[in-house]
Image (cartoon, rainbow, N blue to C red):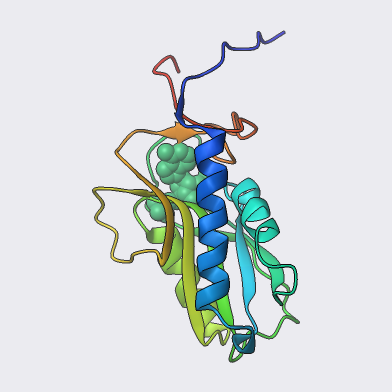
Length: 182
Ligand code: IMP
Ligand code: MG
């Protein structure tokens, strides 16, 4: 049986995350008016916790639909494969034409995932795609930038609060740097 590993040292603790998530929710509600008929597109699997928290901090009367996409750009390692695959698209009967999509992802690393998804959602008719990420790399060759970013981090591979290494650690309530023992 696998032993439970000792707790990892948080890089960003749960309190800081909660505070920032509230700020981001406020910014979203302010900058995307109801008339734009916003739809949150949650990028599975990494952003499921972040997205759930941001959505619950939006004003209760704010009209927003929620849909899910699933992408894969990583295999089981810690380096991008450089390819993006769409494993699950939002429902085909969901009409995006003229609407603003708030695309929610865990981390903007190479930017390939969000570039790919932005183009895809625009092809499906979205009038505007707003990018909201929990994390972004400080130094990046990404050709796109997020509209709302939780935290900027260095080059470390991080886990927790939805982010995984090889499918593990998503359940941590904080963000931690992956120890070098793998
Ligand atoms: P991209 O390189 O911007 O396309 O990032 C794609 C995906 O890589 C993200 O959505 C994450 O799922 C994953 N990723 C990148 N850096 C990390 C990390 O430090 N920890 C966990 N997943 C990561
Ligand atoms: Mg991932």
